[in-house]
Image (tube, rainbow, N blue to C red; front, side, top):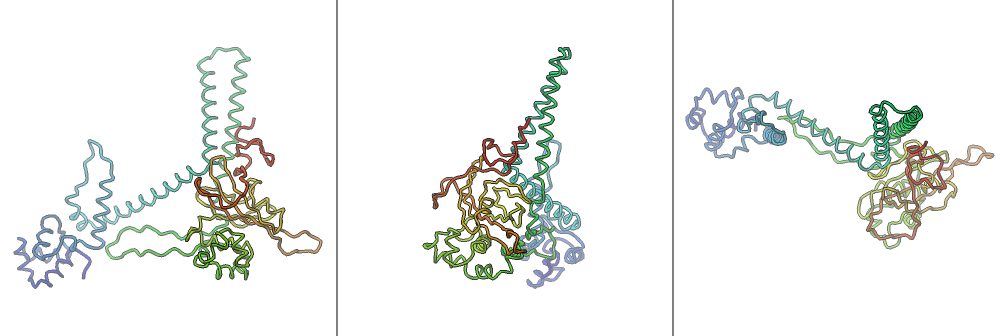
Length: 420
């Protein structure tokens, strides 16, 4: 059956056994005008459309079904969301069916704009969420605003009190210089945060919003498994241990054996007799399924370079190097093969359960100490979640320069946001 309104009227007319002249007489128009309607050369909407539906014994939505109905619904929603002032006329919703049939080109333009707006609103929402959950970003902006306020206040004093002794004037100018210096340092630190968010990750598959069409319907493509979305280290994907972990460690297998390991990664590795690194990556692939939490993972080498990272929504990871030295992924580098289990407590209140272990690569030369790498699997711990492991809680930050734990004995840099 045709997808246009006129085509559907013609099909239903034939099904009911009416001639064009008969149907035209029933609705009070000429057969010639009906012929133009059925061949989509004249628009039909409003009362006339209702009369066609009544005579043909169908619902109006059957004449407007498919993409046309979706377009109308989308335009109605856009009209309802549009803010109106006293001088702004509202959309003529009673004539919307006439508009869609008479001006299909403009309808496609508006549909495309509506889809674009929805996509941009989703993007803005995501960026806003990132701002809300990024302690480094929010704290740096707060400090910059404080610096700007201080500079403005001191400048106003100099302008308003034009006549002041030279010594006091020098003091104010010195204060402006110091606040400007702090602002410059804060701005540089802020700029460092805007690095490529996924330099070691492949881009995720995203569903594209297409403008509505009268001919095609969108199909939902199922998301690919996480192991196919992410670009894992090559020495992992080609290893027999990771292949064995993918085959052995499934949600069903974990559920059956949970009493033996209680979903603790190192106990899972012992239970399935597999290397912890391979188990960590497989648990990441199963993240958020069954009883498993939303896992994040970070792997580094002993130079601090990031080999792989996968963030959770509430915790940033370094894209290159230089995170907090208290993170277990770095502590494990000095304990090759020894499991490290810690709870990480950030000053912003989030707590994470973290597991880390390091391993040594094959020696390039007999005289050289082998290069080692360390991997950390972690997940957020809710405030009311019972502690399954008696592990120490460690106060940590993201980076020394923006960490407010100013008395930390492991600090490598001064707290730049307040540095004189």
